[in-house]
Length: 200
Image (cartoon, rainbow, N blue to C red; front, side, top):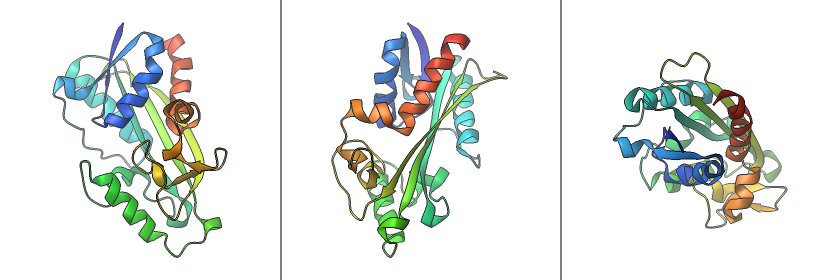
């Protein structure tokens, strides 16, 4: 098994990525197993932040690292919360999801259904080592719109507010297999696995 560090402390992301990578003989270990702290996400784009996180994990562990930087872009908010999706309402930890969703609903309360278009963006980077001059960078986009209230119990983050037109329901109503097949993260990982064959 190849050991690769996941540069994230997000349990939801770990479960999704492990489920997809298991088939590839990759043992994905959370950076918390190595007592690695979260990197300071000082980049101004998903790509920059994913690279910062992956490099930080490589440096701390000496192992290859995968980092995922993702978020939701809402057209009526000029692309916000974007890279600030995880800390949109300013809180951290388990209550952050709840606070973020409350804030997003409040910001959009006067916006009509047709104008609530949004998309999840995901960038996944893979670095062989901290000085890897050519990291793999894979990207996925998932189009939908923001609901007026939360629906469903699955997923995490903004999933209860993200309506998926092809499935006619919120992302949080999808089972994990369906979500991983069509989500922004699923798409980015599919790309990563394709690139990996020639890179690994």
